[in-house]
Image 1 (tube, one colour):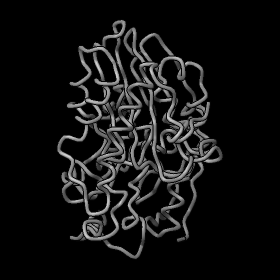
Image 2 (cartoon, one colour):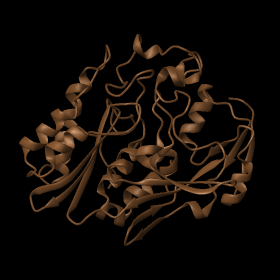
Image 3 (cartoon, helix red, strand yellow):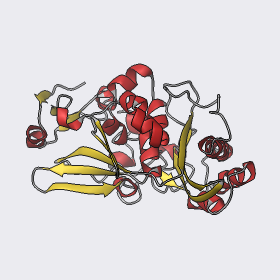
Image 4 (cartoon, one colour):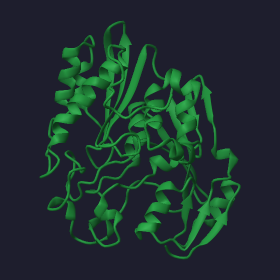
Length: 336
């Protein structure tokens, strides 16, 4: 790990003043320190925002939730107001990593987590994400990579909380000293590698993520998230699904089917949603939605199993959200 200076900040204003000359922000530091140890990042200055109290907390209002980005994953997962009305978000945060990491890692850091590709994460490989002209995953080890919406880079979206925020139609507030605050819908926040392989999100180097906004769900809304990995709890997802169902009795008025670990950015499956809208939620409609979610899938040489896994994950999570199935014991356990 390289030598670096540490700027310890207690206000948003002081932190923004430090965001220059290649400085990087440290909150929980879980992902950042891994990248520094791997040699992927070597900042000359770290701006520690961990002690900025105004960036913590969960605030419920009639129009929705505002979550401070320094709120830990454990705090989001265990909050009664989140669990009552935003179950998909509580589930997603409660399924991330291990209990120790959830107590340290922040929801803001989880949303900003960089891609989990071992070629990108290794200092031994200079890939297209690092300014070169080659992606090693296409001809290399690609069992955990994307099966949809990739072009130049088949890395996958690593953030579990982003799947839930997308499913709930959330947005993030970004703040800079020069331009003030702006709000970006989560669906517009992440940058696809085809558009710019060197950017992961639209946040500028002089901006901080200062709030996460989640609109109040419509009456009759039910939701759930499930994550599937090779190992229990601490592994990244190989498939995950966030489901939001707006129900009129047993009929689904509107559905959102959000997916992570399928493509370079979190995505909604409009094809799956169309299989649910205006219909009763049954095993048949849930299974049809799962099948439709794989429209356009293009598996790589070692990850065709995802084309079978995602429909099952979506099918079971739809029925979980609708209250027609218990949580899948083969999915990652959720902290309750």
